[in-house]
Length: 272
Image 1 (cartoon, rainbow, N blue to C red):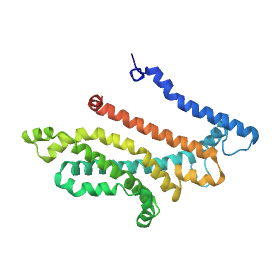
Image 2 (image 1 turned 120 degrees about the vertical axis):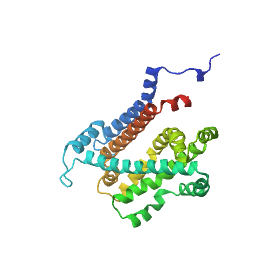
Image 3 (image 1 turned 90 degrees about the vertical axis):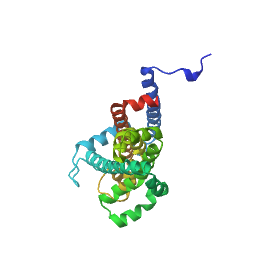
Image 4 (image 1 turned 30 degrees about the horizontal axis):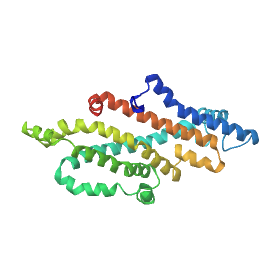
């Protein structure tokens, strides 16, 4: 008897099944919005889709007089700039420190407990300290992102290095490789796919810290705009911005996944 775990959808069926939850959410919102608008045509909590489109068109195609910018694209650029800087620094720190601490026993014994404890500090709890130390400018926002996700990436890479088969290290030493040659030839190729996966898993947290920093102090950005218009109950701005952030995060995750599959196809075969 075949069980349900032995049935898998085909490629076309996967696309349809993946789209169903999104269609269901949109349908539920449309029904609820129409019901509220029938009672109160000026309802702000659940605007019609036409209102979303009109607001986004205005923000994306009309220059704001106060900033002399197209607000939608300006906010997107500022947030992505902060996000990419924070992710890049965190990934570089994770790669370098994760490999060194995970591979060299003395460094592992010294720093592994420190990074374990450091990663448990709530980043938002130290946000006031970051503002005091680095000011209210861009530096404090980038530091918050790095503080929030770098310890996780470092620990993840460190654990991956520590889990490498000892036979590979022994064989490399037998062939005369020194420490740096073993790191470059044995460790680094096997760590890079894990690093990409760690960055993917950190995307949600990175966006959270970007939005949190922008909400408190910023002159632009997606999070800044959301918290700026909340006092007016401007859901026609808030909901499209939230959807845009989600789409950007999804595209970044997809891009990283495709990068890992193209650059390190053997890792996916091994995992399968």
